[in-house]
Length: 472
Ligand code: 6PG
Image 1 (cartoon, rainbow, N blue to C red):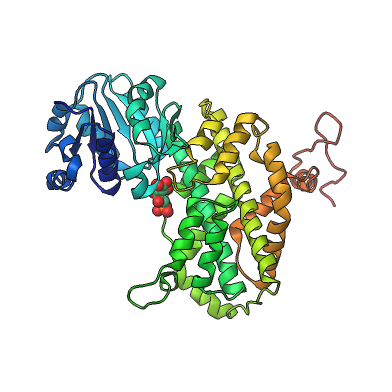
Image 2 (tube, protein in one colour; image 1 turned 180 degrees about the vertical axis):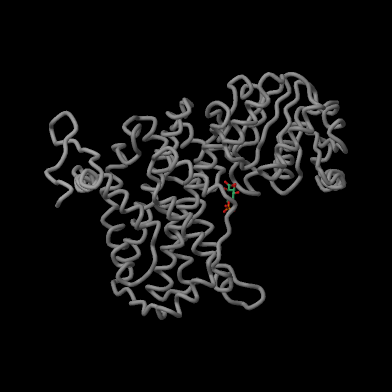
């Protein structure tokens, strides 16, 4: 019996995705560059082994799948994907579908899509979120490609995806690079979410002198309220865990240097290219870079002297409430930015990205899944959020209730000398966004002064110049 689908790349994500597919009743042919891994994988697949067809070459893989063949490629993003595609081209036939499930840069996806046009093969760029667990038991799946190719794989992809109240978290989002673009922005938002959580942790640790064991239940409690989300849930768990070696809380023995694989950076690059402000996401990416400069930071601490952190002095309960709401407000601003970047890309590339669908398929399975995404899905469905999530009536109400806390927390943190770059960027964005008359009248004056760039006058048509002359 032939397999329905194939998968190349039995790393953690690929293996888990293959097991997930097999578990949902699909026969799957698998191949891995280190070929020994293929038999090992089947041998360890337990009761799912029957549905796994181990292949020792790409020719064997092609032979094992019933045409037209869908083949998922789950290898390291970048050159390995191009190499796999090149190698597969000789083995596959017209109407077969190549599905890149890695964290590809969407520009590469668009290029690969074009390169395969006319070859008879179809290409799908598929963003998959949810880490190892998600891949195994239900990820969020963001698909880009032709609608026709989506129709052909929709069955298996919705079967393996996470479900939110029964609704599959897998969807076709648009042509060529649309799926990978949306995944990139998902990761940008993920960076902002994580950074803002870390900043709040910093305030609790350094401003309130709370230990990890005391902070863990704070996040645990928040997870039962408006901040309910996977990232808050795991934050509580990470903070509660003990190090086996020292018996200390594990966070206290982890070096404060964060890694990154590039998707956060890409989301910022694309935001800049599109001319869409995404300051909270930018601050989060920059914070990771700064975190990596451990030696420099230590030297700077010496040069400037360790900051005499002024302990934040306020009734504990009120302060915790403020911190919760500040995080909530910061999160809304960061998501507003992420969605605005997607709207900008949708216009620029003619994608017609379905914002309500994107919010919906992020409600379960993915790393940024949260209760708030359900509220966002409703906001995008009921209108008012087309230009910016901050303008959706439901979010105007939420933000009105939460921004005073963000303001107080950012101010207190600044006074206490505690860095909150993502939260303060979120606040700065919000304040600039809701200010009907800003200060760029002065920028225009300056531009006209030094470069005769001209300016518009309030309530008048045309370009004007100021009363300055070069002799001044
Ligand atoms: C997901 C994650 C995942 C990503 C890293 C984050 O949605 O499942 O976003 O795809 O690769 O976990 O990347 P960094 O290594 O850059 O933090």
